[in-house]
Length: 234
Length: 234
DNA sequence: TTTGACCTATTTGTAGTACAAATATATAAA
DNA sequence: TTTATATATTTGTACTACAAATAGGTCAAA
Image 1 (cartoon, rainbow over the protein chains, first blue to last red):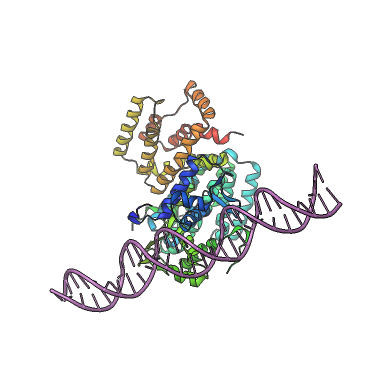
Image 2 (cartoon, rainbow over the protein chains, first blue to last red):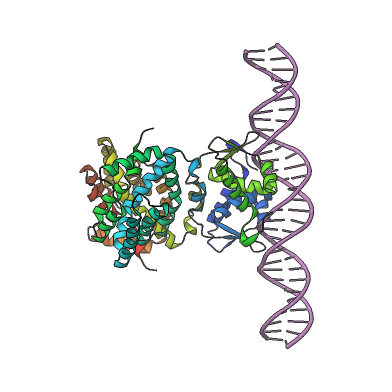
């Protein structure tokens, strides 16, 4: 039916056609699509090809399929595709740098919502997290401890999307810290020697003082190792 | 081979197995995977099923396939899956709100990089964009004009990932502005009457003055309609 | 009439075969 | 050694077949 030009396969085309079908028929979550054989006839492609395309859309969460019931349009899980594509070992250094830049931007920007929403109760929760971490010692924090504080920040800010987004990106940062340990270690050492480390306790103090600008400056310095990583030449 | 429990299909399982294979064999972009028939034998699934899974990974950009050459691991386009899942009409209001929150956070947070990188040349470019828009009149701006300024900001900040991310999210915001016009119109009207509109010219002034904190406050107010949208009850 | 058990037809899920198209590799020719 | 040709391999597409699930209808009993 369609030329096999430049690596595009029939399934690619069919996938696009199905998305177009949803758009042009203004289908919404809950609506049903034609079944596989109908699409096969409509698009002149074998059922195999239709299924390959459907399989993709199914993975992204745009559709659900059930025997006899057929194919149903659903609200996609926005980040499922992003999550699957995020294999740290497949990412180039440059991509990782850009993700770190996004992380920094988000942590600074989300302060806007953090300081809007933060309550006394939230502060109590944060204090519990921080005090536990101080008991452990800032150098002995596990990955989970490190994540706990930031996750709580996102929770307070109340944006589930950003929360998920960061949760997905986080393994990449952990991978980087291990993979580029020779870069991160000296930086942390230097920060420690100069007494420039901004820990969660410091950040919390700005929250308690309701000092948004101060917090934004501090979180930027809290993420100093990432900042330096994404500025490094290779 | 595997139980068909709770809606998970064989292709889902195979997809996971292939990703595991890449991980466990520590494959990197350029390395080749076993061909379809080998996976078929290894996993005890028909070639059809293998192809469905491969088709997904191909779509996400994790692999490339060429006849005879076989299947090659590649660096994924991080946002391709995200982009495809982002059909505005399929998104719930809640999801859109969260995306607006992310937009606001990013625009505030990226100032960190913007003010680090901005040069006299950049300012000249921004001045050209702004003066052209003032000539048109702030109320007659096309979508393209509106995007132009912000895109330039991201360019100066130098984060391709955020740039792409915003480009992908933007249609959702445009869709929302049309779809919820009855919400946005009165807000814009009110802002205009109270002379509270912060335009690109105002933002540029903060950039020229190298006033990061001022810019961050201003961009937050520039995005006031979004801010109010994501705070609205329904 | 209503309820509940039971069919039946439809549709997705999986397997397998067949062949076309592209191309890496080997082989033969110059 | 280089170039042209042949071969074998692997993906891309089509088609058939059947299993499994189930929506919707049928029929019998209360």
